[in-house]
Image (tube, rainbow, N blue to C red; front, side):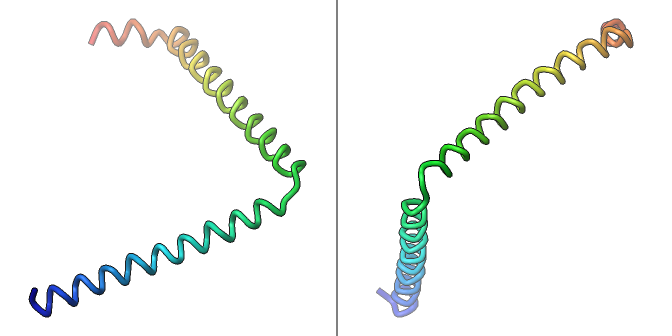
Length: 83
């Protein structure tokens, strides 16, 4: 193995181990932080996210209905067929 190839392999291994070390420490710190927070906090987060997702879904459905109504009122369906 040439010296250049060995240097490249070593630097790649060091970069990978450095990233794995930082990633592991972040995951460890996050799991320690999550473990220290009580159940009421997580329940409120889940309820908040559920409400957001439900509102997003129904707003999307309303937008689709409004778009269809707009197309019917403006007569865009007939224009599309003529072109």
